[in-house]
Image (tube, rainbow, N blue to C red; front, side, top):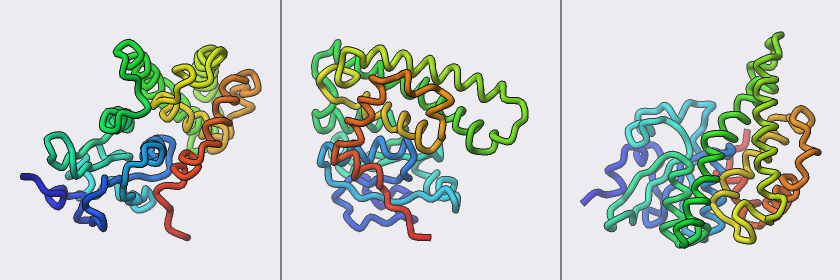
Length: 236
């Protein structure tokens, strides 16, 4: 039988509570998806900070368990068949936790796949495009004199926001009145686009009133407010 200690990641981040799900993360848009999901579901978990400043994600202990060297990642000590189970990729983790708890994903097959569709919309569209816009607006790419790369991602981000805005025009949440993993996946990225990437004016967020309304409702949720701060960063 596999034990939690068999996973190399636990050598660098020992579990203080080995009976709880273990989260290895950082409060990035992808990272907080999972911490918010933990807070929303009430699952007991232990959070470990994976610092990009010290390249923790490239350490042999981390990569030995999670070969894509990306956060977030989890180990469930009571995974399928009662065995410890390691999983990376935020979208996969959201689906796993939704199925584990029976929360935040519809049980009806058609609605379930529609929810997964919108989860993939974030994974394949919103995340990569917003991230590239952030690079060209506030990080290394901001110094490029040629603004065509930035403007390419501005245009695609606007298109994606338009799709989302239309979806939310007649719905409280992406799937209607029911809050799901689709919202947990998408809305941290919208928040990041505005706050971290400073792109609200660039993309014309004022045009997307249904998106901003849903974002306000999202960040007002107590579980979201808690999850946005997990894992806690060490004081500088």
